[in-house]
Length: 473
Image (cartoon, rainbow, N blue to C red; front, side, top):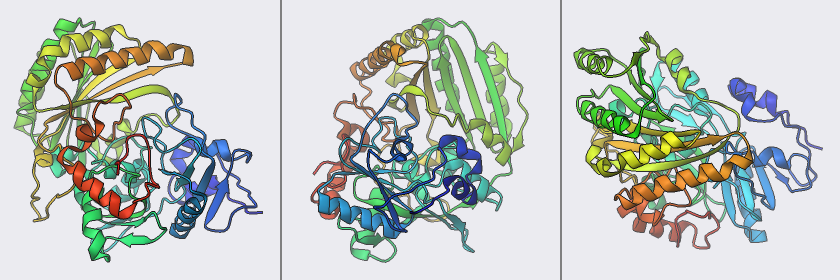
């Protein structure tokens, strides 16, 4: 009998504040060793490890391999090969379409691999299941920052492999731009280290900078450069209420126009939740450019929340989001260079948002350092991520309380997607996947896709690692 107290383990890894995300686990199995625990449907722990953040999705793999270290991952991959099982990889369970699970195959679960360290060169070394709240708590206490997202329970490996944007991206760039190395277990169960394997490592590192996750193998370690952490997060929030689609569209155009003057040290989001619009700003500095922007919104919107600045570690916690599972649909609403890309469809989009209970349409500011391949420190942010010239990213969300409300919500989201597609919005963010995206290979990966396919043929010619929108051979 093997005993694992997962609550104690999570606390030891600095994840005590995220215990609400996971059940406590007391694991026992006759088919396991110290490196990997195999769970099948008749095991009482099986359902604990099929947890997904999205309650809408339910999938049943044949076996779940819970790995405690890299050696366990190697054993699990070799076992999958022996049994001829397709494999998906699960760390945080945040994939919007449940791509970290499957039906009838193997899931390699690395959710207990959450070690994190910072060396004397200010480089972060992370295991794949590190959560963003854990990352920020660890790195900010040491005066360092890795620019990444804001949802506290999202896994660092997943957000990195898809690109990774957030409050600091305009100032410092994407998360994947700071990735300097990975260790990955390939389809044969062998370890590739991008620092050591010159023949495969350089191309694999390029692919891991925005080429998506779960395509080539199982990442067991990620290494990053970091930057000195800013001390303060300035926050500003404006709201307008009881909007009709026409006024919401006018405010969207105003927001796009004002964002042309958004300084690189600031981020902004346009968030239409039903008929209420929230425009938010965060910034690591407060200067004359911000003063002008804020004055313009103060005179245009209905309400100014008048927020005060916070120490960075405190301010970030407002954006960590909920940690419990929800019924929802969340999709990429496309990349835009400016308002002209959606001018012809904003009223139609906002009509659907206003009329659909639980629907939210958000547009986030990109641009800034994301647009630049060359960094001020001389490094090059070369990678598979192809959407650097987009200045904005749209995202649509819809939430409901019970399964009986799902059909109406899903129909509303499908209508949004049709409107966007018919108005020429065809490029999408891989970390916001959706099964209804047409020609997903081009939408997510653009010109990087053939090169990703070539690497897929080299590292996984049998397509062991596969999911519905993965890299195809």
